[in-house]
Every structure is written in structure tokens, then in C-alpha cells.
Amino acid sequence: MPQLHNRMKYLPWTQRFIVRLYPPPVNKLRAWKGEYRYQLKGPPRQNDPVLRLIHRTIKEVSKEDMVVSAAGITVHNLSPGPPIWPLSLKNAQCPIKLYAVKQWFEEFPSVLPVSVIDRGSPFPLTVDKILVEVEGKWKPFKEWLSEFPDREWLLHKPHAAQRKWWTKNGKAFPIMQLPKELREIILKYVLGGEIRPHVNHFGEGRRVILGTASSNNPYSGDISNWRHGSHERKKLKKLIPHPNYAIFCVSKTIYEEAMYVGWGPDARKHFINPEYLKNVLLCPTPPAQPNWLTKLKLEFSIQGYFSLLGVEIFPTMWIDESKSLMHLIKGIKTLVDLDLQFNNPYENYSKADRNPWLNLSYNMGPQFGNQYDGTRRVPCHKIIADWILTFLFPHIKYIPRIRLTGCIKTCVLKKWDYILLREYIERKWDYRTHGYDWGREMELIMSLPQSALPPQCFCPLSCDARELEYRQDVWLSMPDSFDRDDEYTSDMDVWPPSWLRYRDSKIRRG
Ligand SMILES: [Zn+2]
Image (cartoon, rainbow, N blue to C red):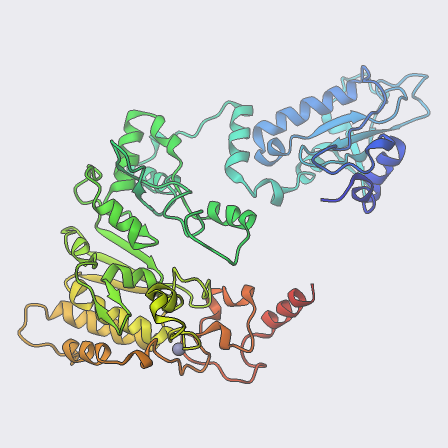
């Protein structure tokens, strides 16, 4: 954030005019924005009928136009000369008067030349007689007023603008007059659009709540996230939807409806790691709604799925049934819809809480020395997704709807979509048409020696970010950077798209 003298450097002339006319105190020129904001110390207020009418008009228009209301426009006289209306000997020679005008978030006001047509008329002054000059052209004050506010900026936070507007015009949204179905859609968005439940605390009286920004959130503090600084993470954390609990205080009816929307069967429950899922499922006081876990979404890393399944990787791959949490998922009798999301292998690829092989030798203890240093640490994302689905298969095959989302190769997705669909359709038959032999596949995976682990990548675009010649954190973390269809060729003119490379080169230089 620049100092005041730098902030004043590149102003448009409408603002520069004012800071030249009424410069800030010299001792404030080096002040940062948080320390001092420019304040117009202009001439004293006048008994000016034109300014009074301008203020009244802004107030009236604010009741009708949300953006004008949100802009918080203030107008001050900029010169000590007499008001331009009513016509008198004093002002006959000056038909124009300068005012300073500003929206609430702007630091520097802009100059606004104002004139009144038909000044000699005996009729009272009305707003349609007030003209303002903008970029060399005169236009009616009301027309300018509707164009002046910075719409894009002010509607960036529409709910804040809306609330400010309602306090000004005394109106309210008649939510209870809407049909219940529409009200439920609104309530769903008030609750964040997606539900990320967690246990509120771990002491006495703990219970499952609809979620907060700080837990079950991929950017919350308990999840290590090297790529983002704490400031950026704070911003990202807020982008993950979470409920606005104020809705429960509106009325008894809204409370009940919001509770139903949040815990109802239509609201999918998201979990970012097995810990949150386990704590919620084992909480002694689950939500009162009996079918609250009908739709489930797991957004786990490789390590997350391995912990869920009890998969161990030492000395070779095996499943520790005592650590598996799959019995908890099997215990959800109401579950009919499961969404399994696979994370982007290039995002946080070096974090051990995502990839179990990263700290293998460290976890094995000092007696193994550096035996595993220098070996392959990053698994092929295509193969590992296929293995995770293989491990999950016997536990999830009874669920009617399973969706595989996120970073999953198209061939793996098609294979498993087909197997899971046929398996469910043919669940009562004594044979299956998908031809998938689960026992054999498991045997193959489990018989792999340690040297074959983690599975080596032969994808056209390596699943290991460190092997990519073309690695840039910004680019890699984008969902598009995952080569779903194995279309990558080494010819960089074809892929990634040229605009990404252009942006990359700018980042690198900057
Ligand atoms: Zn691969």
C-alpha cells in the first residue's frame, strides 16, 4: 500500500484538481493508507439550496437504486463563492459552481461542475434543472447519479449492499410469502450450499454441527498447506462455503426449515479427511434427523483414502483391518449416494499428509536408516486411484449411486463407472457381466514387492510434479493441469495452452 504522496501521483485530473487546491498536511505525505486517508479541508458549509436539493435527491434515489445507496455518495461545496441559485446580483456572473463528490470507499473526491438552467424562473428549483459536467458534456444530475457509482465494485459483496439498501428504504424481503420450495433453495445457500459437518468440541456435550469456516475446510489451520501463505489461506478459507447461523434466529418456522435443509437427505455432507468423518460418525449425539447421511462426499488425499481403508505400505502393501474405518461407512444404513473425489496430484505434492510414501523411512524409525532414501516417492496418480477404488470396491458396491470426481484419469473413471454400475444392477444375480475379478486384482496388488512401490508412472505427463520440466506452482494447482485423457505431447506449443505459458513467464520474471 503506497504512501500518500505516491497515492496522489497518478490521479485523474478530476481528483488531482482537488488535491492541488486543498493539499494534505505536509507531515502526512509519507503516511500509509492505514495511518492517514486524505481528508478534504475545503471552505465552510454554506446555506446552499442547490446542495440541499442534491443531497435530498441522492437520499430519494438511494431508496430506489441499490447501487446508489451502496455507494454512500457525499457532496461538498468546493469554492467559497456564492450559491448559483436563486439568481442575484452576486452570482449573475457565475453560472457554474464546483462541488467535490466521493463514494464512501474512495480516498480522493472528484470535482463536479454544477449549473442550473433557467435560473431567473420564479418557480421553485427542481432537480431536473440541475446539470452537471462530465468529460466536457453537460447532463441532467439524475442521469449522472445513476452512472456515477462503481457498480462492479459495489456489487462485489451484494449482500452487504442489499442490507444497506434495506436499512435506507425500510423494506424487507418477504421470505415467508414465498412457496416453501423456493424458501428452501434460499436457505440452502444461506447454509453455504454444501454442508461440511464436524464435531463442535471434544468435551462434554459435544455434538455434530453444520460446519464452520475453521474446520473440515481444506484451508483451515489444521491442514498443512505449503503453497499458500497465511494471508492467502485466510482468504481461501473464506471461499469454502460455511453456514450463516444468523438464519436460525429469524423465526421458529425458519429455524425448523433451515434445520431440515441442512440436515435433510438432499444436502450432501462433505468431508476432507477421515478424521472428521470418524469424529462425526462416532459422536454420541448425532443430528436428530434420521436420514441426515443420505448423500456423502469424500474429498480425500491418497493418504486420506489409505487411512480410511487401513492400508499400510510397510514392509509391503497390506490392509490392517483393525485400522480400517470402512465399517463406519457400512454402518450408514441411509447412504444411497457417494461422491468420491480425487485431489490434484500437483497440489501440495510434497506434503506427507497427502502421500504416504513421502516419509516412509522417517516413519519406520532409525533402525531402517536411510534405506528408502533416494527411492521413488510419488506414486502414479492413475494407478493409485485405480488401487484405491479396488480397495473400496467390496465396501461400496451396495451403494446405488457412486460418482467419481476430481482428478481421475478418464480410462480409470470409465472402467469403474461400468464395474460399479453393473455390480449394483446385478447385485441379486449369481453372476456378473462386468468380468472384473476383484480377488485376483487384490492378489496382484498385494503381492507386489516393496521395490515396485509406489507404482511407477508412465503417463505422458508425469504424475510426479518434480519430474515435470514445466513446473509452476500456480499452473500446477489448477484443475486443468491434470491430464485426464493422457493427451499430453512433449511439443509445448500444443499443451499447455499458450496463455498459461505466457502468464507463467510473467510470474517467473516478476
Ligand atoms: Zn501417472
